[in-house]
Image 1 (cartoon, one colour):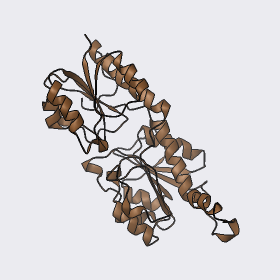
Image 2: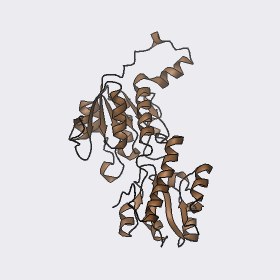
Image 3: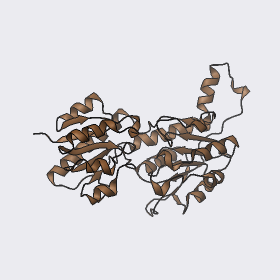
Image 4: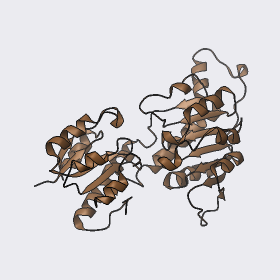
Length: 318
């Protein structure tokens, strides 16, 4: 008899078939990225005692009350790296391990970070739209080039390291701030995000979300970044104070902002929509066919390790 798996996020038909080879699948993705939780809650109410495994993501999460509704829950996994809305500590108190899919989409996210950075610096969106209305190069100021500048990375995990590798291809100098200094990496270390922003031309946000990093990018950091600076966020929307970014763009205190994530997803960041130099994409940095497949496979690998009694590959609440 197959164990019962509750899936609270979207899966393609291909991946539903793959997962169903091992599980009785209760496929009930919540609406509005978890803002409406009735789909999952309905299954918990009906089948809570049967559910052994849950697959969610960081945005959708899993709440303490939902965990309580599944008395035989054994393992919680997330697609992607994020786990900010999963009750990780509560799960640990219940003896339930939580795993993410670290190491599966970091290259896709790094690619996207560079893409939106280049778009912002070289004003690609503006130029693309302008050509369609008769724009020629003599009519506009010259956008700056990218190579040889300074990139500051806040959060030098798997994603941050991949971004740094790509930036080196543009002859950039790399600086970083993270929870601890890595002496095995030759990049320049900064003790605070503000000092990092003051040093760099491009500030890349690649750290986890949560209470510790809430609005870590604020007016002070943006002022330190300066009028030629570019902010890129491919982490979580909560790290950046949206209104502070809007004010900085309006007052020309930064050159541009490029955000793949924002505070109240899936609602677009209204305060930024008027700015041509605010590049916005709908949280697609980690989404590629290869990355999604790898994330589903990582979930299966963690499940198989769990039932074999082996160490879990990516447990986050040891």
